[in-house]
Every structure is written in C-alpha cells, then in structure tokens.
Image (cartoon, rainbow, N blue to C red):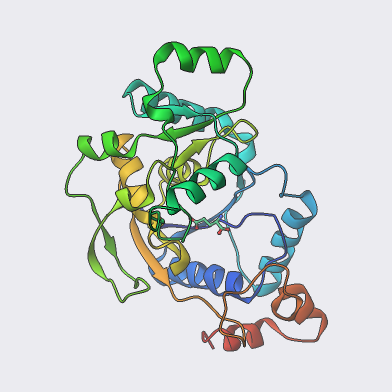
Length: 290
Ligand code: GLU
C-alpha cells in the first residue's frame, strides 16, 4: 500500500493565525503517525487578494512551527489548464451554463424574491443563485457572450444530481452537528455553484477537487467550516471520475469572543505571537495539541 497523503492548503491572502497552526499541525501529526506524506498547496487562484509576501510568510510561519512538507509546493495559479480541462469535461456532460448577472444584480434579484418569503440559503448562509440563466435560449446566450458581457460558469445542480445517486463520504473527524462515519452528501443544498469566473477561470470547489486527485491526497484534514462543502466536492469527484478521499474535519479554534478567527485579527496571528515571545511548543499547547 502506498503511504497515506495529507495536505495543508492555505490561501496567501493574509497571515496565518492560530486556527491555521492547528490545522497544519494536525496534518503534520497525522502524516508522522501514519508514516504518510505531507504536501503543502498554495491556493492562490484569487489574484485580487493573494500576495507573494503572504506566501513567503506561510513558509516562514510553518517552518517556525516545526512543520516539514514535501517540495515542490503546488501553486494553483500555475495550473489553470488542469482546472480548464475539468471544466470542459463537465461542460461536455451538459452540466455547465453561463450566468451573466453581476453580484449587485444577484443581490437585487434575491431581494425581489424575498418579497414573497425567505429565499433559500446555502450552508454558508449565502442565498442560492436566484437567476434564470439556465433557461436562456441558445441564441440569446450566444448573443450575450459575443457582446463581451462578463459571465460566471455555474453548475446545473439539478442535472448534476440526476446523474449520480447515493453520494456519501467517510468522515473520520466530526461535522458541526456531530456527524461522523458515513455521511450523506447533500450537494443540492448549495444550488448552482460557480465553477469559474471571468477574472478567475476556476473556483475553490473545482480546483480543490482537481488538485486533491492529482496530488493523490488520501485523507483531507481541514476545519469544520468546510464540512458541508464536502458535499459539492464529492459530487464533482464523482462527475469527474476522481478517487474518493477520506475526510477528517476538525473543530475551529475560536477567538475570545467565540467567533471564528480572522486573518486580520492581530491578537491571534502567528507572526504577532512569535514576536511576543511565544514558542512553537507554546502554540501547540494553546491549540490543545500540547
Ligand atoms: N484554501 C482553503 C482555505 O484557506 C482551504 C481549502 C481546503 O482545505 O479544502 O480556507
């Protein structure tokens, strides 16, 4: 049996905080315990928010924590062709359509629909796509594309769900509501998710699924904030004929106010803690891995 493969996959859009330290250390410890490999992946597809200095800081902070990872590190921005190929495969299955509404138009549409009662939200609390781009006639679609109007490519969730059934995953950790073991995937709860945008020719969901498969990741250790997204990931893996990894979602480290940590909160930033004299062993203790 090849050794298990783990990955830590931060986005270089800010400095790492205690929550990232916990996730990275859990991955590192799992790799050590199992004789597995630890990969580091830089999720930098959002060119407007990701910066080279944050990437450099990620390497520095992880090395300071005593974490070792394999090189070369995969940077998503260097592999856009891989995501394009996956998108083409989904398009060939007739599961992708262009949607032309701007973010502001979507917000307006949701507000209009909410006049008749609450509009459904995804597990992250964002309104489901309210538009009707899926049913635009072919000619109209071509006309809008030719006019140069920007568009997002969305997954036709209803059609995608008709192609697969009985989706689930093996949860080795725990979901926010205590879910563990065999968890039923409910991708329909996310509606017609975005697979690519004009300025970012892929999306988090698409690139994470493609990369986890290309890098042969066998156990995905990440925060519970991504637990429900696993439903979309299992759907895309199945549609794209990719292998199924196991998942181990962990509890999030919360701030003193009980809220999720933010990259902009200096009190829990690893660099700030380091400058304040905290040691890597001290960080381990404060995230409960002492
Ligand atoms: N890049 C994501 C983040 O920084 C994590 C992706 C994942 O672990 O699946 O939140």
